[in-house]
View: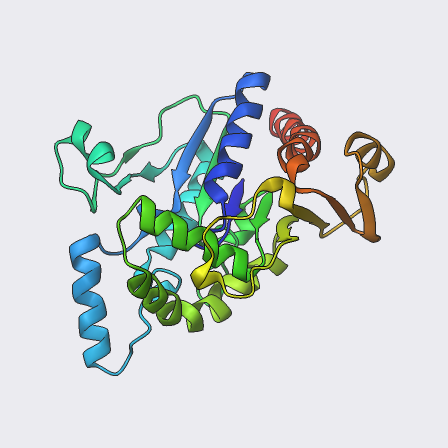
Length: 283
């Protein structure tokens, strides 16, 4: 299974919802962070960006295939589907993550095998539904989830995260957003047409200038738009009865209060995961 979304979209929060489902249903999951399939560590990425800019490409970033090991990611998905195993590593974002490994932040741990006996693999990152002429990660994922806040909200969330957790200045974050825009358009957006379900949070407060927003709009100040690529087999009357104050805007779309997003995920994803486990057991 793959959760895909841009930086600041909230994919990590969705992963926590999946983990609640796994614990409740007694499932063991191999969690794969998309950052672990970046091509460069932090120092190497800075140098690669400098070299690319000197060669006339000011847009090298983690959104595009050049900065990632996407053939290796596809190979992992394929290998796990065949054998339940594969090679993974971790990217250590900060001192807290790096300390147990005795490594500096911004580096990767060594590659190692996924522990034996897991029931499923859950990927969370930028490229869970990626596909181009050479690589097709998406075709190996049995359930693809898109996490797609409207772009102003996505930027607000990224600005607040990068300022408070990573210490970046507003100017540096804005430069990153601008540098990533071509790859966002060409490599991130198309993935949301390959997902089975998209969860898109839409604020009901003014986010017209995300670069001066003082607060992230709360769940109660938002709606969540839930789009099903294939509505067949979805029990919409049941979902509407459980998600109070929700409604359908199109035959394949439910709009629910933002505070009901986690409940909606639990109601929608739990039976889908259990069906995947039944299909796995039969095969």
